[in-house]
Amino acid sequence: MKREENNDRLSCPPEVLRLVENFSRHVEAYKAGQYNETQLRREYVDPLFEALGWDIANRAGIAEAYKDVIHEDAIKIGFICQVH
Figure (cartoon, rainbow, N blue to C red):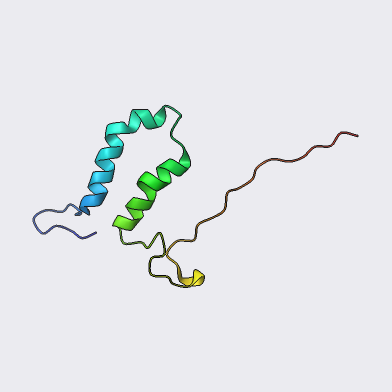
């Protein structure tokens, strides 16, 4: 982001502003409990980073070691308890 010449505020990519405005309009629905982490990531987090110049989907086709983003597998939480 760069500073605007006429004031001391940071300029923001239009897509970032659109994402923030859209999220703000629907925030109560997101808090209701039906909106999950994957939806949030796909609809807001990934587009936010793309708007900031990150290659989220590796469209450049670069090697794993040099990617902007490395997607993680799901984390399994829990344990098995055997009673003898």
